[in-house]
Length: 322
Image (cartoon, rainbow, N blue to C red; front, side, top):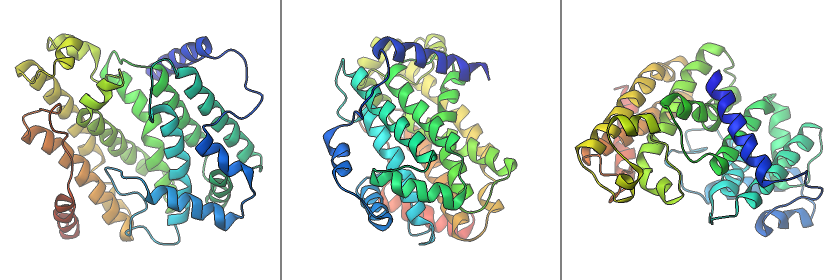
């Protein structure tokens, strides 16, 4: 689609201005480069990925107890790949370090290309190589994720809602397709339902984190909608929660709920504990939107989150099929 190409071209143009020529040696932060100093067995590599996964908090469960034990190592290897790349783009971000962050991502892309060729030295890629081979997963989805992380470094504003959706197709949709594939579901109909849910989840996270993203000089609220509702960047930086801002955020939430509704039938189309996992994920994302509305759209002074008590209630709802 046109918005895909527009975002990718913009990302490539900025990247080319920041980095001249290929990197001949791996460029990684010390904490990520350190594992390269020793050799790893496959089992040790999966343990490494599992520890990394369990050390991070996410809005939605990753490899939770609802996921069969036989699949959790694969999910952990995928998550370790994504989490590390995401940290390259976002963790301890400082002005002017974009070239370094892109260098880290370029090295991760090189490691992925080597992994595709059967070569892997880093524990994350040793485990990832095993997962890709065992489940025959397309590496294209992983490359799409890396494109999204590159956009996180190079793209700070999005003109239209479709532009934001294009970012979601790279940053979120591959995750749902990977999970479905691990469980043996590979049909386009389910993939499309998953895309709707994953894009909606990503959007809910954007509206939840307006203040956090603004601190990184990143605005996902579409520029044309900000103009339509008379909300300027100064308006956001002053943390004004007035009628204009409420209308702007309500407009985005309404569009996001349409996407959630479009994917709502996905949990019923799968079997076993995956059905419950997907239903809880759907409910959790919808609950974020509910929290934003219940808080009067004030996402500046108190970040809307789903608490442990909320998750218990959502679990009961999911079990009850309501």
